[in-house]
Amino acid sequence: DTLVLSEGDPVSLWLDSSSSGFDLSQTGSSRPTYHTAAGPLLEPAVEFTGSIPTSLETAAILGTDLFSSNKCHIFVVQKQNGAFPRHTTLFRTAVGVFIRSYLSYDDVLYFDFGSDNPGLGRISVAQPAGWDDNWQLTQLIREPPDIGTSRIRVQGTELVNGPVSDLLLLVNFDPLVIGTFPGANLTGWIAEIIIYKVALSNANRLAVEDYLNAKYSLF
Image 1 (cartoon, rainbow, N blue to C red):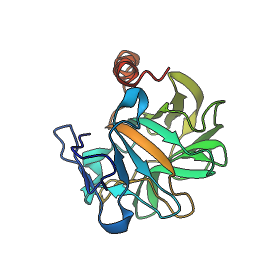
Image 2: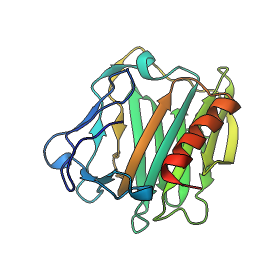
Image 3: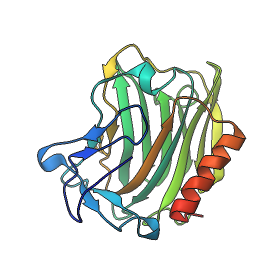
């Protein structure tokens, strides 16, 4: 994603650097703050506050434009403020069917794909040592077929995987929201988010990991 702002500016628009045009935007006091060198290796980052909830979201997007019903691969470069216990990274819902990540929630990482029912749509794992107040590369993966596997990877290491069977509902137009969900507003920083509507091969996953690690020196 692309930002052209000055230090301390509120973020009204975060441009999608792909050709998809899924730009993130916000208005008023709900805008997060841009920092020119708050990210790893002094890269830019966006600061979200939970006490006065700040967030960014896309326009209403047809679900099939952003996700597949039974697969995705999401990369997030994020640092949470450890003084706050509950953080939502991203969320999208369509008629009660949703994709959501808590990174973290009471010291547990959650990835929900289709629902928050364990074994059907949710997998979870205790946050690793050193999670709070440090930059992390987290990967949220849902692999096909319909009865497939979800995975959470942090700093290049798989922490958990489990069988899942719930699917995303993709026929509606709904926004993707970054940084807020009732009771779990993100307090922390995001430097980059990459979303693929496919499950990457190991070779492609490693290529993206290498790109992000070279850019941010995360692990």
